[in-house]
Image 1 (cartoon, rainbow, N blue to C red):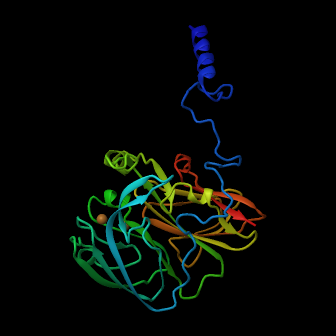
Image 2 (cartoon, rainbow, N blue to C red):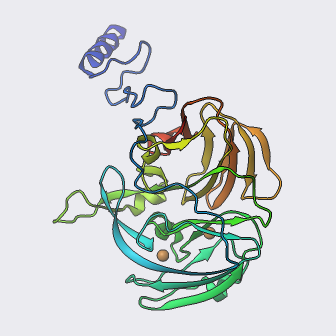
Image 3 (tube, protein in one colour):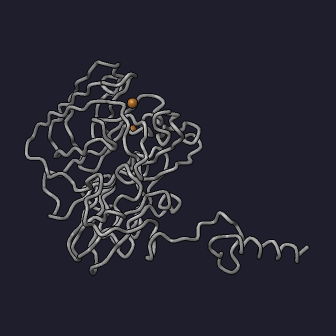
Length: 331
Ligand code: CU
Ligand code: CU
């Protein structure tokens, strides 16, 4: 019996395109190819010569004290990853929605217009307000206006809250709003990352057989096909984010989910400070990995010790394999 097993294992190893290391289980489908020759090299690393599809640079600190913000809810086909089309539900036709930035004490005068064929809504985690008054469904071709004052500094999620919320979020209806403290944080190179998941199946589109749509069963089973920063798998590995060695880097991270917590980690670095949500005093100092829950945010501050490529990942590594990986490229 043992001899038969050994023979089967040898046969499997011979049939496998890449030989499994000694002692590894003989599974023909085990991925043994490393996309990049670097620790945590979950995706091929580009040169940074071309910009990423979605800019991760944080918008500048707000100068006005009142913000008229108008967003449109639209169903549109976006490009998911590797050029794959995906039938998304969006704010302003993009996933994530636009990054908004205000300062504590500012008034947000918000209008949402529903140009989609089904009801949607808008929930700002940065607001303290009655959901039953303003986080209500907006019917197709209708609009809703409300105001709130941002009282708490931080990196906050916004999203459609129409039930089933998991479907509306996983279809693309989320984004980040940064609320700055009145006294500015120290000058830094700033990026915004929104982590989220995509659950896909064929859209059944005869004109485009590559097009994908959301898979509700995968969503309920918590089995995403892609886990991404800013809407596309590994886009900041193929288009690294430039930084300078030793400079202060600040990353605003919002985890839209809808299901996977982010275990945010930068390889080769230790966070100087992590401000959960964005509170005034650091939640952690000198920490290797900090979890950002679904529906939460955090502000990460770090410096890179020398020039090089520093992967940032969700250290929940199935998610990094599925695209939650990028590179900070220090010059
Ligand atoms: Cu919605
Ligand atoms: Cu929420």
